[in-house]
Length: 209
View 1 (cartoon, rainbow, N blue to C red):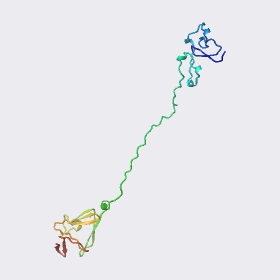
View 2: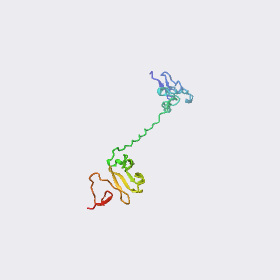
View 3: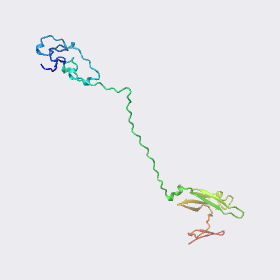
């Protein structure tokens, strides 16, 4: 006789080799014992499944209450996260950094007047008994009148006598009076143009080529 366990064809229980009938359901294990009455399979006890241990159950120790063809394979218990487990942190993409505005710091020399403070001074030459006075003007274009140069002097118009304008790094003078009485004293050789007026003393002369 072999020592190998004899499996019951009715409930699948592993019996000892010396048993003639299943220890669990009393079903005959051999053909010569089939003449003895056997209880119905429903009366066989059912093994309780131990939670968490089903993955390690030997196939011979599985539930013997069903035929072998109806037995279910062992299943692992559902995994549950511990109660104190922290929730997964939400992923947030880093926000794009704002680009720094780059400013061109190169300055066009011809446009220096836009960045510099243009100041022009006119020194009033005193007559007998007067004191020297300095007039200060600011801006790219200055309109000279009687009020802002020599108040009370009737030889200067109260509207627009002359204009001073800053262009390309130079001050330019232009006459605005109706009688054209704006002059420049000659202090150095000056180029003459056709139609220029020269004031000699109190007499004016027009230049013609």
